[in-house]
Image (cartoon, rainbow, N blue to C red; front, side, top):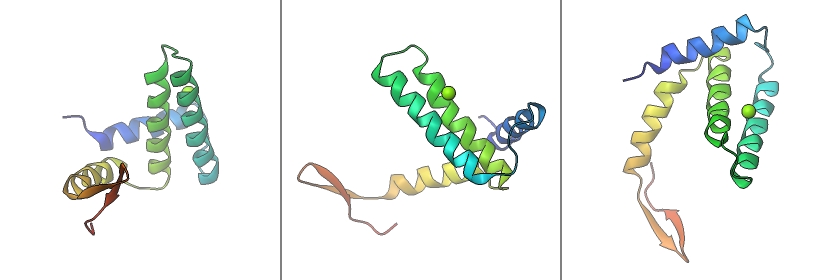
Length: 101
Ligand SMILES: [Mg+2]
């Protein structure tokens, strides 16, 4: 299995090496939104780089997490398990969560 903590560090180390932003959290939040926009554009135009643009969203999020000393990989794993336990029912075709956690 991939070591997400190591991946997060590698992404951050590349930011250091490239002299990218390492301090401004708001700038990174904007970058994530920008990368999401690039993914949306690639998707709607059926560009072949669609997966790469989605990867940019994740890479930027991991870089931000390392800046903020957050263990994003662990949070993703925990949230996946949490999501699996949630229960939903459809109301007018829309899934509504019916369990607390
Ligand atoms: Mg991009």
